[in-house]
Length: 184
Image 1 (cartoon, helix red, strand yellow):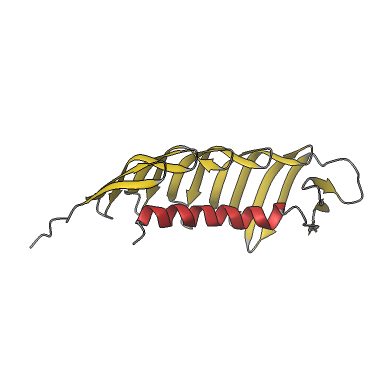
Image 2 (cartoon, rainbow, N blue to C red):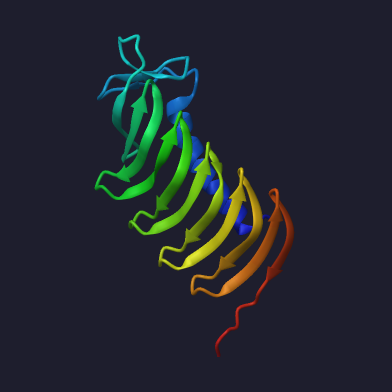
């Protein structure tokens, strides 16, 4: 049986993969209608009809979301933001040479923080935290180059500790589950 945190991490990566694959598939020749931007076979972003890689801010819509990111010499570099049409941020982070780096934040549709953590060139790295929509901590743990490592803690909606799991290079070593006391 898969641990919940594994599912949460996979869900997070799936979001990133979907967004990335929509915009940076090497064989893609997709045009952004408003700014006339295209991604050519070399994987770089160009203004349609120009031979020099694009530098500037791209703002586009994707399934009722506003996608914004900076481009330097044809590659995503700098701030990345995905938000609703109303301006509620869903994803916020930084990109360097088309790879996620530094701190990234993911939000629920109501604007409440869902998760926060760091990337090191597309790999989760360092401390990550997930929250319930009520703001209480759901799970916390550390990644080392994309693999879970050390001690991970999982909590109930009410804040009660549910489990402590130890990982080494992504492999589950030990798990202790707690049965929250039920009030009568």
